[in-house]
Length: 208
Image (cartoon, rainbow, N blue to C red):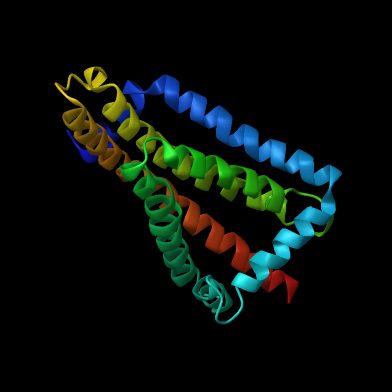
């Protein structure tokens, strides 16, 4: 049985939670977008904040440099690394190892911010048409990471659901399931990173 099959079995095992997280995540993205349409000034302020983080010395300066190079492979690699390590492991999974289900809260916060920042209105209307694919695919990577956070919390609070004899064993069973899911998380984020790198660099070149 390969790693992808084992990871997919975790999704099937928690299919109701997986569907619920999908509805919650994309629903919050749409809610954020709807709010921005009514309050466009907020998006402008958030986009400016993101732009500052991309400047030299900013927290995302490496990403800006990678895209500025025009090299799709380099940009995709940097994007993948940031999304997997920072966006998934550190923001969603690590908190869940300490506080049950906290990764779900972090993921939903990202969904709201995405909706607020990436709403296709004003100067972002046309660029967001092709970028919406990135939003969907990359979002799926975070949804799978959130499902992993759910498995950890479920194992700790309801160990019998994993046929575990105690809370510690249930917790470890949840962590194991979360680890399996990261095969899918990595695959989805890799696809999203390649598309995003190619799409953004193409738009940069067309704008010159």
